[in-house]
Structures are given as C-alpha cells and as structure tokens.
Image (cartoon, rainbow, N blue to C red):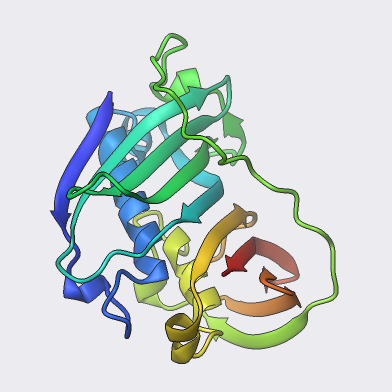
Length: 240
C-alpha cells in the first residue's frame, strides 16, 4: 500500500524565505507516516486501544533536495519499505507535481513499546503481519553512526503542554524545533540544509528541562538534547 497526497505548500509552513521550512519537511513526513499507518490499521491510536502498546520513533533520516515555494504543488508518497520482528521502516517522498522533481526523501524507523512494561514488542503483536508487503526502498537513506565529540551548551528549554503528543510525551517534531531554534533566521536565508538525521533516545515529559548541546564540524553539526542526565535525542544537520 502507498499513501499518496497532493497539495499546495501553505503559508503556515513557510519560513522567511517563503519556502517550506526545514521543520515543516518533517511535519509533512510525520503526517504522511501516521496516515499510512492509519490506512494499514497499525497506527498509534489503534496500538493503544487494541494492543496496549505505542509506536515510537527510533531513527529518522531526511535528504533535502529543494524546499518548495509557497503555493507550489506537491505530491507526497509514503510506504512500508521494510520490517522485521521488532521494527518497521517507512519511506516518504515529496516531489513536484509539475515535473516530478524530487524535493525530499526520508526514512523512518519505528518500534512498538508495551504500555505496561515499557519493553519492545514484536511487530506481529501490534498488527504487523509477517507477510506485510513492502515497496521498493528509496536509495541513499542509510542511517549514520554519530561520532562522540565535545559539545557546547546552546540553551536550555522547558517542555510545555503544547509540545506534547497524544501519549503525553514530547512530540518528535518538537525536538527538531528546539534544535532549529538555535539558528538565527538569516541562517535559513543564507544557507540550505541538505540532510537531517535524528536518533531518538529517552522520552521527556511536560515540565522537563532539556539542555541543547551542539558541535560544529565544517558543514556538519551534531546536537545532543539531554534531560535529567539522559540523552533524549541525537541529531545531525548537514548544510550546503
């Protein structure tokens, strides 16, 4: 099954360049993934209500080719590209409807956790059949191993009520918001982001303080978001 959606880039998702913001790229991906999982009846709400479990993001990597402009027509496609006993891989592609130009490719790795024990559940226990068909995976979307490096504290943020998802955890997209907020607005006018990769760790909750650390290495920057002495997120951004 392939979830497909067409639309126009809305003003609410644009930054000062009048193009789709870096944050909105991942918002589109997350929405497409959840809609696909809903169509497959393996979405997060179904997992809670029927299987006493929840899906969590493990890793997400995004290659950005071009950020589309306000009111530019796009086509969004999302599909299962692989699965194993404990994980699910979903690829998402955004392209221009005018000439089929690729705008971004993304791959998300998920796993299911038991709501009572917090342990990883086998995918088959949350509705993913062993014979679920997979589509051909998008190319050049392997996950990276981040280096250990000394990082500088950029700022500290507190998780607020509007940062939460329906599981009362910090929404995955909010971690990227905290990271991108360390850049000045002019950064997105003067440079182009070409890659975002996020590795998710410990969950955070309303009221938690998150320290945002950054290490710069030429065009690549590494972030660690730490709360209560534990890493919530590691992230890599690559700039042109």
